[in-house]
Amino acid sequence: MRIDAYEDPGPPERRGGWWYLAWLVRRQWPRCLAGAVFASVWMVLLAATPYLMARAVDHGLEPGDLGALAGWTGAMVAVGGINAWLGVLRHRTMTKVRMDANFRTVKVVVGHATRLGAALRSQVGTGEVVTIGVGDVQTISASLTAVGPGVGAVVAYAVVGGLMVSVSVRLALVVLLGVPLLALVIGPLMGRLQGRETEYRERQSVLTARIGDLAGGLRVLNGLGGKGLVADAFRGDSGRLRDQGYRVGAVTSWIQALGVGLPVLFLALVTWLGARLAAQGRISVGELVSVYGYVVALGWPVAFLIEMGHQLSRGVVAARRVVAFLRLEPPRDEGTREAPAEPAVLHDPASGVRVLPGRLTALATSHPSDATEILDRLGRYTPSNATWGDVPLAEIPLAQVRARILVAAPEADLFAGPLNEVIGAQETGPRGAGSVDVRLRRVGATSHNEPAPAEQQSGADELAHPKAIHTAAAEDIVRALPDGLETPIEAQARNLSGGQRQRIRLARALLTDPEILLAAEPTSALDAHTEATVADRLKRAREGRTTVLAATSPLLLDRADVVHHLVDGKVAATGTHRELLDTEPGYRALVARDGEAAAEEAAAEGEPA
Image (cartoon, rainbow, N blue to C red; front, side, top):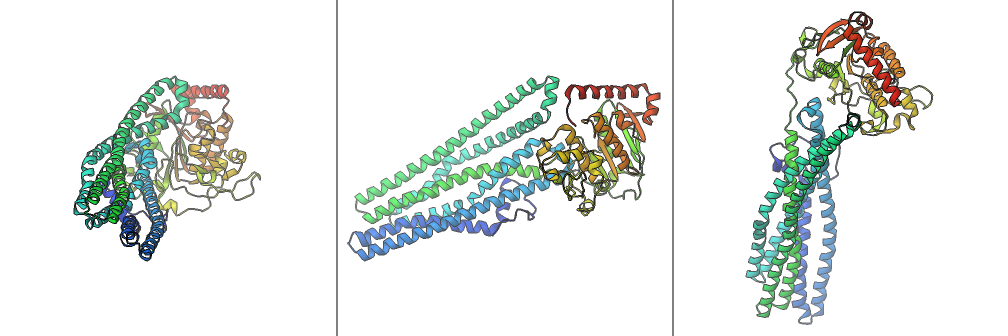
């Protein structure tokens, strides 16, 4: 059976960690059954070797019967060859079991993260998702070794016990009662390991999130003088994680030490009892040899049983974290009313902002977060009383809102991959000709990482807005990269400058050609010349389409049809840019301060756009 990394993983089990592990087994039960059979036969044949050796000694070597000796020796060689082949099949099958569990869990987690969309960040931290994707998935897949070697170990243990009954009932009882006694000793440590492992994973996710925050805001922290404070907090968190790791390691070391030491003592006891029985003449020399062989053969099942318990203890902790993530639900979409059939006014009563259809509207405020909150309300990313036409946004099905309204967040995620996949464009002409033919390849997510509705996905590969990259003034980015649109881009486009990342985000938003585009600070990282170019092109490209920009740049505000000046999150004045300059001192001060700050920053840093 092959593994299809792209098949539907099926509805996951969410009742608990053990239930989730059992679901992974059920989804590939033929492969798991094959692994258990291969492992069982493999371990039983390991125990069969001492039995054949005992027959060779008693029936061939001791009476001097060379024919019998050759026959039993040939049987041993044949069993060894078959067992080597079974060992290959067992290992290959269990590798497929682990890979299937790995891929299936990854698909389940990623699929659920996509369904959560914009609600993801409000319900779970980035570090938690990363920890699940990097650590817990591997731990879960490794725990499924219990399906093959674990089952085989139980079968082989029972078979060896049965074989030893023919040698000595006393020895058989010692063997059959030995592992339960080992479980009683190691069992409490397994429970303790689960608690330690759970706390360690929680601390690990917190530290991972802090690392992500540091990587994304180190430059800002350095400029504000807060780098040392955050570094101290990071050292404290990492120290606590290290201490918790020591506690996990202490429990694990005891389990591993007992897992090695106790079986040795147990098997030594069996060997000593067998030697005494042979010395008393109660068992033959061949039977004594078989006892030694059984003792050696028991080493594998006992080791696998202990390892199985250890892996399952860690696996169920990881599975519980996955299940907790899968239980998160996005806000329920109870919309039943149809969206306006024609372009209509968007209104946010909380701020007083009215967005007229077909106009370029700007929101100017000294607090960018106020404008961002308004855009989120108008895009229905946060609960509000906003209306679209005469219909409350909350009463419109979310799919209809997403199909027609796009919120372009300033720090929207940029995924790793070729530039054409990052922005959805595809280069079709010869590079260097000075023109880029852009075709729409919808990336399946808006700038808020919300799943694209079916209406958008059905438009894949249709001709996109021919001026998307041109409008974002991103042609020079494509020309400067060594392979144009095929150039690999790192996660979050870390190999591009801040201004280049901003233009890539804008181009990606424009490629979707939304009916209503709500963009927050789309040009804040650009130099004045590039910003003016983007402002002119955006004005022309979105002519007749509804566009809302949250910005304080005079270059953008001068192109807007309507400007809302916001004070404390509410509309203080409305008009054109020039009208507000003449009549609103507060607006004039805001715009002048922004223009001077941008000029000083550009002169001081000289950062390329």
